[in-house]
Image (cartoon, rainbow over all chains, first blue to last red; front, side):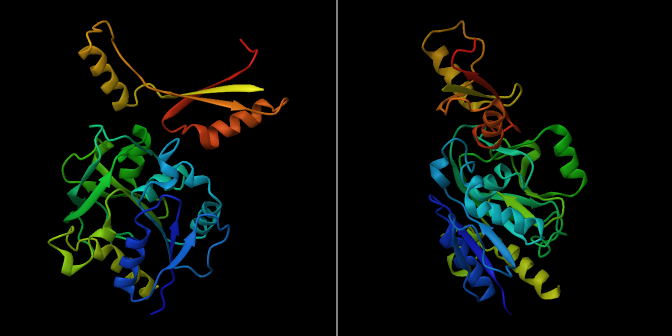
Length: 229
Length: 79
């Protein structure tokens, strides 16, 4: 199949290659790579991925500078047209700073950088990113972040839960996130931000060394949705 | 024109950094401290006549995240 995915690279991104590798491993098609300074994206994209890392050195706030870079104006416009957008870790921070997703990601409640594989519960398996999981399924995906403490006001949290926009929750408290939220969907379900790294959990050959293969189905879900569209 | 933007976490937003500083102060024997909140001071040198609306836009679009932070703008001379 043809699958056109673009991975955005900001200065300080460091999971962009992992993301591109994961997308190619699952789809068989090399991902397009886009530099943050580009004001335009390639046309006919099936997915835009904002990778993890420390864009602009996390200056000011994690994701704040990247959210205002030229390429993000194009990403915001594409998201408004319904192009699926996946933001992982720093990508999630960029999406909240760009107001494509509600809430904000604060310093972990324990102050420490957390780097380990954590248990997640699939809270919504009806989105294009999560249809390959069972509702309530327990999966394991690595996290590696300092600012993953998700916060929104209680009304927003109630709305997110009521509308099924919490995609993933931490199975056990991880970083202080409100209601253990690990991943959030946009109102139209086509933008997903999550702190855990599904792109680090796709290789069967690396199960022992890395975080298993539970991330693979996220990418497969996107492909399956596109194939059925 | 000198402008000072103070950015603070909103009341009620947990400030782990402030809490760590509080603990450190207590450990140093400063036991009168009741709470610590850490904010950010941003100093801007802007062209004379830059209007308040532009400063507000800078704060709302980049310097502060109004989901979690409040900000104040202080221009030189204004007391």
